[in-house]
Image (cartoon, rainbow, N blue to C red; front, side):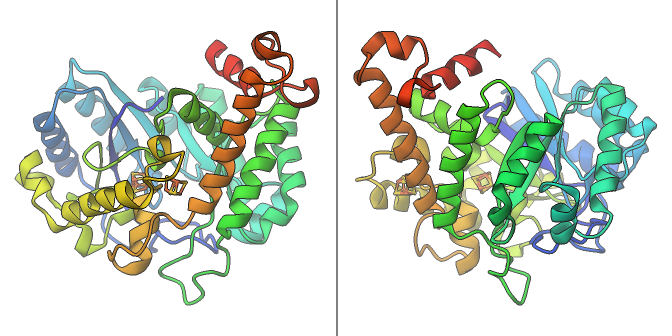
Length: 383
Ligand code: SF4
Ligand code: SF4
């Protein structure tokens, strides 16, 4: 599980894949060097003593090569000792080989990779040959004991095949993390692949039902997070927690941003790791001020919503990037968040106070005697 303090290192924005709906990667651009990693680590050390998760993101982070990770991972661990450092990576795994897998296994780096469903469906939106290359990387990762979860991007097209996608995840035993395709800000047709918020909400409810119907055989990480949030009454992933000040990203040239999604956008740059800005200096930047203003906007705009404590207006990038930083509303996925949070909260109430009462609840029985939200919670606790 990620710690609340999270720094994303972006070795490069380059990526060899050509996914049709990608909004962030480039085909050229700089590569982070070890001096920048050193400066980034010193800057992290100067900020606080909290346990930290460091995620290598991109672009494609494996483009940095084995020498980079063989030097960077132990350097980060040594410089940040004795605090706890957890690593993670987001990669399509095309470039994973035995040497890279060895260093990632040694430093316990779990990887989130991306597959959108069965080969034909995946390659239709991610490019011919993508599936085989990623699956090859997953086999290498498995041989070395590197943990891999699978991010499944649902687009306006692929959502029509949701049954086939769930079947694919069930048959392969993959843990699913779902991602709704966002409007691409760098594409001439920004909405061509984007999943409309209403459909996203219905998809989440569908996946909740599938998860409960196949409890023990299917796992959807987003549903775990949503259920946990309702239960503990605070967001447990960045989308539903105030990420400002607990999440940062460092771009290939050492630029500091609020999150990997903003990397490369000059108006969101908050400084440079070589200057080791203090928290107070970061707070004075226009990027921080805009995000702080968004937080205040959420407090006001969402104050009547029953889910505000564990939703917090959703992702500020989703809300602010399409408007060039102007606050024109909360995360456009609000409709989806309301739909799934209502569903979870109502089912949980029915289980706790409905027919069968405490006995049914403790047995984890929901609608029609089938596994319910409590059964899912019990499974999470026992993991
Ligand atoms: S901007 Fe969005 S994706 Fe980035 S850390 Fe914040 S909530 Fe997460
Ligand atoms: S569900 Fe919508 S209204 Fe409610 S807190 Fe989230 S963004 Fe705000």
